[in-house]
Amino acid sequence: MLKLLLALTSILLLTTSYGMAQFFEEGNFVRDVRNNVIWYRCTVGKVWDYDTNTCTGETVRLNQEELLIAIRQAEQQLGGNWRLPTRNELETLICDACDPPKIREKYFPNIEREAYWTGTKNRFHSKMYWSVNFMTGNSYSRFFEYQQLPALLVQDR
Image (cartoon, rainbow, N blue to C red):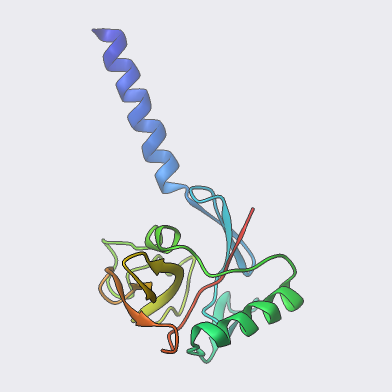
């Protein structure tokens, strides 16, 4: 019984510390060990300011077709293979305990308090995409590809 209790306590400690260490800052990128991806810390349209350690500039809201162009530009400027995050990846950024925006601003500063694109289509309505709203912390599948929303970009590690 004591061994079982010690084993359960060890598992709890390991999973708790792992959950708290999901993100590691690397300049204008955040390494996400839970999802095994690298995030660009700023919303599309903004850039990382190394002097102030924050994202500056104006958010650009894009539709899905415009995002393909933005992703190609990110690949040219940042290197790597960038993409929109999946619904599951973006949902892991939600911080329920945070005031809006519902995200850890230490890692993702100046995020808009609104819905962000994912690359995940609704399997029941293929013309709609999932979004994650950083004002409420909820996910929705009510946006068509022609609508314009902000986006974060991610690449596989």
